[in-house]
Image (cartoon, rainbow, N blue to C red; front, side, top):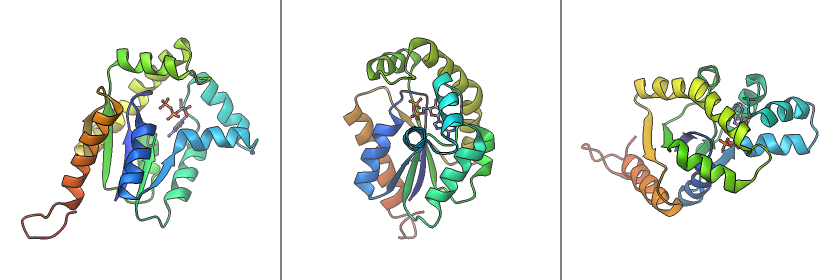
Length: 186
Ligand code: ADP
């Protein structure tokens, strides 16, 4: 099972990815978390990452693509959260992916959740900027995968537990139900 999970900031990608990883025994690769760790490690790319994250801009693709390709290389079962955030990232992924979970959420709900979270990049001004970046850069990714019939749309507005049950059951149906030839799909 090779999954990406995308959705607007505050849609609950990280939370759901963690729960799904546990449920299906997948490696959880949280791009936002990895980037925040790299800032703390004061690595070579740390300053570049910090500057972009603090503004609510996307971190340059040469950094993100390398992380994703490295972390997913030779891994059979994974869920990557927060990737791809633009078409270039989608095209830059070298591996195989089975499904892209698209967690939807209304602006009202996500702003409320993000303000409660109180992360450094969760001020109203930066949140609005991140939503703008999301609408401009990430929305096209959704169309891209919809065309390829890889998109799995899940409503992220209900409670964490309700969203999890919906997502879990949808994945079970796709990955663990027998198709008409009596074979497990895909
Ligand atoms: P959220 O999705 O709630 O905003 P994340 O932790 O997923 O939280 O992302 C926080 C920030 O990390 C983004 O605003 C961006 O600066 C950076 N980031 C995360 N994933 C990517 C990515 N795939 N490409 C570029 N930047 C990213």
